Length: 455
Image 1 (tube, rainbow, N blue to C red):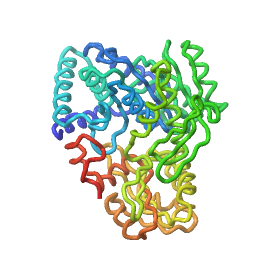
Image 2 (cartoon, helix red, strand yellow):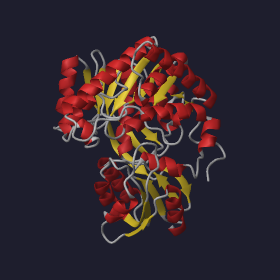
Image 3 (cartoon, rainbow, N blue to C red):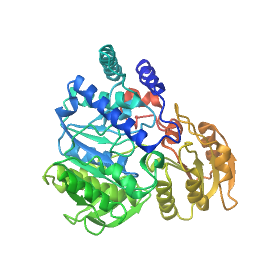
Image 4 (cartoon, rainbow, N blue to C red):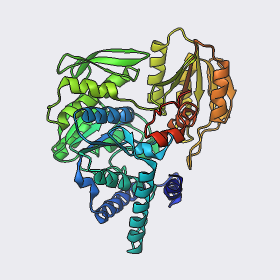
């Protein structure tokens, strides 16, 4: 596994991204060329993505949870389901899941070696070497073909129209939400960002969305008219209603059956994600899903690092909220679910993210903020001191660059009835989650929740 990872990570240091100030038309031309190169490489591999059906999911927030819910529902329905989520928290094998199980390390090494040989043959024929993102998508699609999945549920990395995953022709394309994130590449307005996300909608597909705003929904509707895709809008009080969330999960009434359904992830926003997943699964199966199957799939779904409770005394909650919209939603749910508890927050963000808005949403809730710095290859973090400077309201702040030491400080300062929240970056959550679920155990047991590993 480590040998394979060294090779794959080495692809990160390929041609650099366009520098700041690059004209938008040049950025777009590069993205179009990248997709063309990846399509040609997939053709060289025999177009593995055509060996099974696909579901494609994008959104500013909620796409990872929705991907997980859809995969779990279809698994409960008897399909052999491949799931691709991005990014991974701790180990690369999280991105290659079948029936909820991570690819074994030895199989991962063989897969990477097979891909390396294919890349060498491709380059020897005079073609340009795939970059990190292209390699990962091609490898994922090939793995699912080799393992004979019935369907692959694929999460977009960022945007959609020019994302490297947009080489598939999905039966269902889903857009969970549209918000301001990745504004350098996707645009600074909601309609611009919606246009990027709507780019995963293909002719003959069904489009499912929970987007209802007057700024973004018309863009999605126009894409559906252009492609001839059917559009399903998942609105509260129509497709789902009567949302109830507590510290242990979220439930809602399914609009189609009147049955109450539940997921184990807390947060009212998870009702929207789950209702989206139910509609996606129904459309994929042409509405041949018993409600008992839907209920079992949702109940079995688990997603590491998203409102994940890893310890009880004190409670420790890991949530990979990493943009202002997600953090504002997290803050609202913390205020409601944990009213009366003292909250200690461990916060770190990447340099590319809007940490000021995020930390200002969290400051009113916090009894203590530990500012830290996520550790990830080739993505610089925001300086912990800069984060501390943005804390408002006279909240006590501790600056500790090391994520491991930051969680130690929070736990040392927390009482048994307090709540410790780790947020601001999925990478930070991955760094700190090692305390409870070590990577070695995840790799060995093939699950993000290895037996006997939890602290």
